[in-house]
Structure formats: structure tokens, C-alpha cells
Image (cartoon, rainbow, N blue to C red; front, side, top):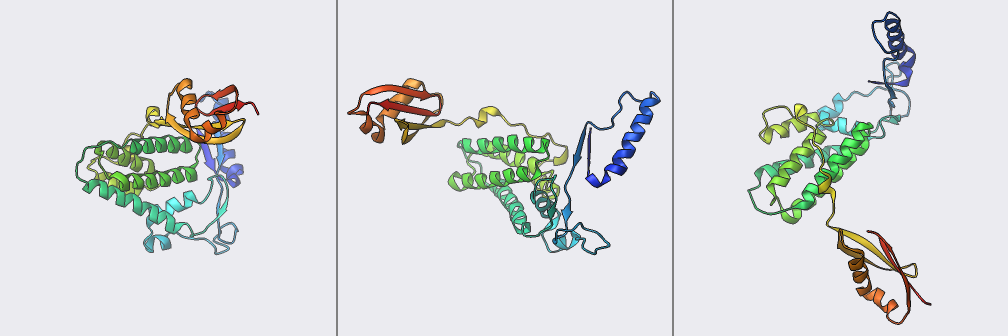
Length: 287
């Protein structure tokens, strides 16, 4: 369905493909006249000096050197996909290699720590919220080839999982199992080798690349509380955190009880109350 290639190939590969499609259509061999539903032109990885890489210019860069230095193929893939939007050209730089390598190290470490953790009882809803939000983000980004933003979401996910681990450990093993396995599935298209290795260490016999893609649960994205802005005559006086789904009456009552709000209401005539659901309460008082 998709033709993905550099714009410089449009007068060769794309032209030939369209030519033969129309020939076959004219001969009643097929029922469509265009070979592809979508044309996508990717950007180019340029030489560090901004020029197009060319053997004649002797400015090509082989990945072997980076792999042999110990970074590995996965970190090289992560860095190249993270370097910028896939449809824009960008000059090659190894400045992000260290960050890509450390990110994969953190994935490896937290997976090993989860494997070694002892069973414990507890609930960690933040773990499920983090991974379901990441599943939603990465899945949407892959649909539009947003590889760099998908990798950024994975990095943010790992950071949040480390925070959850530091605060309460791996007490909710069921949630952590889903989170770690889903993380590896989301990572697999970008870093296939480390993902396959860790998948096997988790006890799975089949390949991670033939496993089912994770699906996010919208119910896990709902937060238990919401932030309400409190104003008096349009000026910010307080922010309150209140349970999601609270009624207008309860929100206004809680807003009036705030010390920095009540002092502006106590000696003034309340003319009206403006309520914006889940967002704002504005008390309009006589001046």
C-alpha cells in the first residue's frame, strides 16, 4: 500500500512501477491503475559536513566502527531513528550515541531487577497508567512513522518506571510483568536484539517479533484526581486537587474553603459563580 523511498528515485523505481501497473490494467490483468495508495519520501542521513554521502566523495560512514566500539547495533539504530523526523534530512552525528546506549542499559537493568525481585503484595496503579499511556503514544506515532517521538515516549516511560521502582519496589508483580513485557514489545521494532534477548530471559519460548502488539486500556489512563483553578474576579487565588467526578456543588464548596479564597469572599457580596466543569471556578464579587 505504501511506496517508501527517497525523492531521488521517483523518476526510476516509482515511474517503472506505475508504468507496469498501467500496462497490466490495460490488459485487464488487474483492476486498479495506481500501484500505491500512499507515497512517502524519507529524508537522507547526510555526512557530518551536511553533504550527501557518496563513495566518490569518500565521506560515507559505516556502522561497523560504532558496533565494534561496544555500542552495538541496537544503540546505533536507536540513535539514527531518534536523530530527527524520518522525512527530514539531517547530518550524521554521534553525539546522541551515548544517550541511546545508556537508555538501552537502563531497559536491561530494570528488566533484570524485575526478574530477580521476590514476590510481594501491593498495588501500584502508576505503573499501569505509565505503560498504557506509552502503548497509546507509541502505537499512534508508528502509524505516522513518528519514530523519534516514539523513542522519546519510551525513554520517558523508562524514567517513570524507575521512579515507581525507587518509591515502592516491585510490589505489584502482575502490573510490573505487563509493564516490562509491553515495554519490550514496543521497543522491539527499534532495538530487535536486546528485546529478543530479554524476552527470552522472561521465560517466553517464541520470538518477541511474532508476539501480539500491546493494546492500551483507556480505563487505565483515567486519573483519580483533577486540578481545579480557583479565581476571584478573574484573578488566580488558588489551585485545588479534588477527586475526579466530583459534583459542581462539592467543587465549589471545596473552593470556598480555601484560605486564600475565603478571605476575599468573607466581606464581599458574591454576585455570581462561574463554573467550568473539571477546570475552573471563578467567584465574582462586588468591588
